[in-house]
Length: 251
Image 1 (cartoon, rainbow, N blue to C red):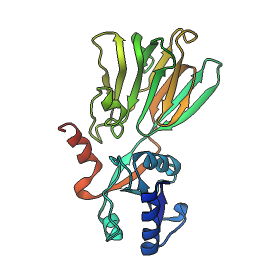
Image 2: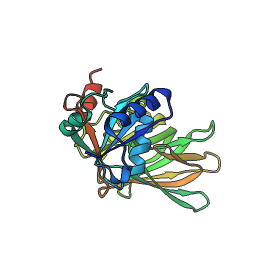
Image 3: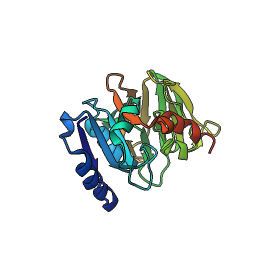
Image 4: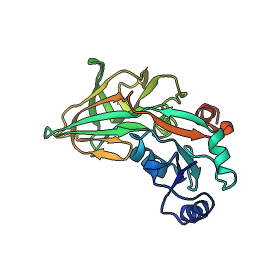
């Protein structure tokens, strides 16, 4: 099995990188059977973005402080662990953001696409599902669309629901909403297209972020799932991502 090891810049990750290369060798990621990622969730997301179009399986080993997307670290029997691992298929979101200047930008998100106010003024955002207006004006700090894999991250901290993998739904979650006062979000089909229209953007500017890619001063943002991109994440059978997402609802 040809392995490619990628590590974050932390001392712990770099030390493990040298040890694992000595034990298992090193291959070019584009020619590897499996990419082994050493670090935390942030670095894992970075690597998944980098190689998502190649559909190369990725096996993460926790070397950071947060490791929800990672497996427990051990340098023993790594080949056997990867052979026995269960594959989880993740589908990213496509964000198409149109700026107030008319410029259009596209970015992919594995966790979520979020819109946030840029100033002290609350954001005013209209929400459409499949071109039908559902909320004429959401007043608050912002709103997000989260995937099942991202539902335990920013979405959960904003009091959004945890979504089991394979459920084919997305979380539409407001961020500190003021109006409508009783609206706390919605679950929508994964194939739905969500459109956000920013109102009065000169006085109330809004930014849009797809994972770590931010676009400032947006006028319109369209979000939909990318069914043609398949991210192949590998997990130990007893610590797979699906079980972790379920367990988050009881912690």
